[in-house]
Length: 58
Image (tube, rainbow, N blue to C red; front, top):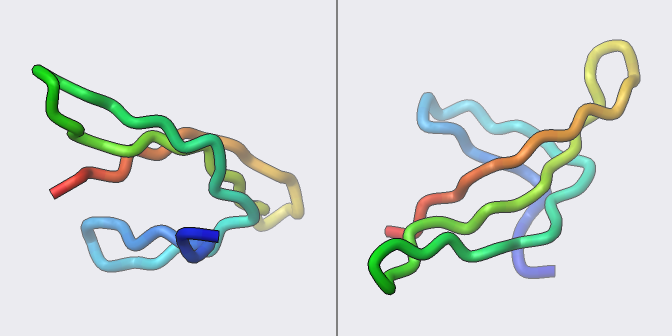
């Protein structure tokens, strides 16, 4: 594992994840800009929700 299963959003909140997987590197003009990953959370009703997240490379 190379990352914790949580995302810290710009507003400071931390979201716990069930999965963070399939990392891909996004490149613009030959330079890496972001890592794109698939993420899953379990919502308040117990349903697994999936989305993509872009993690900026600074």
